[in-house]
Length: 206
Image (cartoon, rainbow, N blue to C red; front, side):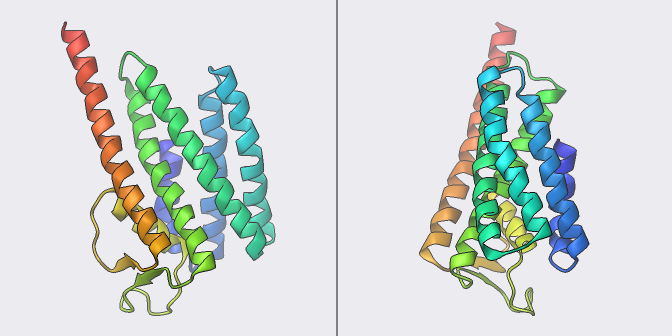
């Protein structure tokens, strides 16, 4: 799952100019949806609710690939925000409820971080649909003046990691509110993870 997420993130910057790569990135996202649902199958309630969210998400993604209409895109982006948030919480519960950190948990942690990046990229894309000028990109870095989804994935990850290169900035109140929430979540995720690892180390040492 983490490999598929990482591959899709690497592909997205190139996908805005190549329809085939955008299709591949979305198909990888469909694969991630299926893998997350499979991962939580041990918890019956989460497994069933996961399918309830996953099936519409996959259907809308495939529909958007076949017929990229504005209404379909909006519904797909909303579904992606909901599912990526659900998947991140499910994986976080998987990590926090385990008494031992193994390689699976480490991959799950990486997966959570990338899911958060894609979640906020979809949220930014929703804002862009209603206000194309909500996020400003320096003309040197965006000569065609179009903000693609690859740009939003890049911006989302730089915000999540508090890197902030500065060539992409939120302009509208909605975009700024999302950016501030993402920065808070990014810091809290690291803090929760460090606290969990510290407690596990102390328990094992005791």
